[in-house]
Length: 147
Image (cartoon, rainbow, N blue to C red):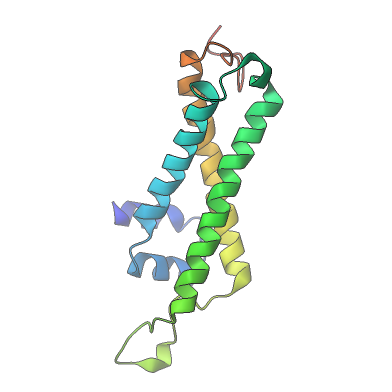
C-alpha cells in the first residue's frame, strides 16, 4: 500500500518531503487520518448530532467541508513540525545527508494544503454516499442523484 500511496503523493508532494514521509512510514497513517476525519465530519453532518433542519443548508455543508479540511491541515502541519523538531538524521553513517524533515515552512504548508484538498475531495465523495441516510440534508451537496 505504501508504494501505491507513494506514487499517488508523488503527483503533488515535494520529492524530498515525500522521501522523508516514506522513510518514516507516515503515508498510510496520514491517508487514513484524512479518510477518518472526512467520515467523522460527514457522519456528524448527515446522521448525528448536526442532522437538524436548521443546519441542513449549503452553507452548513460548506462549513463542515471546511472543518474537515482545516482539521487535517493543522494535523499535517503539526506532524511535520514535530518530526522536524526531533532532528532525526537521514543516515546515521553519513551525517552529510542532513536531517529528516528539514525542508522548511513553505514545503510543509504546501503539503498540508494538498492534504486539506484531498480531505475535501474525500468529504465530497463520502457526502454523496451518506446523504441518502439523512432525513434533513438529502439535497446536500447537490440534488442529483437523490431525486
